Image (cartoon, rainbow, N blue to C red; front, side):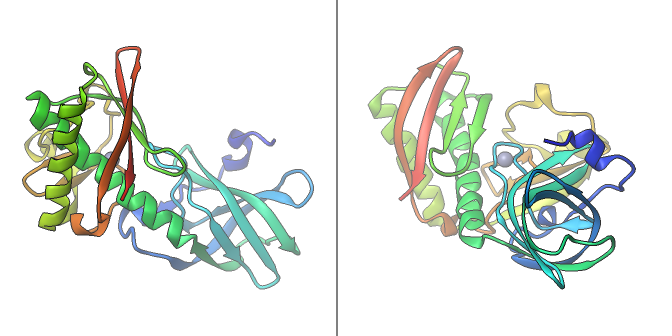
Amino acid sequence: MVSLHEIVKGVSRTKPLYLEDSYLKEYYCKVLRYVKDKGKRGYIVLDQSIFHPKFGGQPSDKGIIKGKEFTFTVKKVLLYSDVLVHWGKVEGIEPSLLEDVVCKIDWDLRYKVMKLHTAGHILDYCLFKVYGKTINTLSAFHGPPTPYLAYQASIPNNEVLKKIENLANEIIKKGINVVIKWVSKNELKQNIINAPNLGRLPENDKYRIVMIDGLNAMPCTGTHVKNTSEIGKIVISGVEEIVDGFKLFYSLG
Ligand SMILES: [Zn+2]
């Protein structure tokens, strides 16, 4: 394994296109760097990317990067110093510098993750309603095979869990719009509602706020659906007690 530090050295930051449009499935980009790994494996850095990295509770996107004489299967995407590094397997000749390529993400996987991530924000709200205060998350994973949210709170009983699940599904059925908004550091306070984890928010000049009208508005760099109705149904599949709280396992019905 080549170190990410070496791979991104001197290369300019990648424009993350998924932050502006989560529904972008295919896009043209340029190769800024190719670093060989073992065998046919390698790392590609592009000028911009539609591939979401393994970050912020989301698994990395998968898909392909196609050049004139190669097809690169993206198996993992990592974010390092604002540079997106695509790791995978190359078929054909190696990508060359400044080569134009077309990127395609595995849309089935991505759309599932979008639904799961927005469902996670809805569950945050349901916890807020049921517990009567904003509950911090300890960790989260919005991807297959086992999505979960770990909350810093006492473990709920079955009755409370049913309440949370019912409320979540009512919200989904209402068809509420999910809106993305960029705000400056000074505007942050007046633009967030019921946002957990503010204590560990990184220092930035601007923040991307994900707003679900009437529920919550919180800093988040994930990919989300445009309307809660797209989620279909949330099923809470179980809870597990952990140090400082509990894990809530959920899936899409
Ligand atoms: Zn989020």
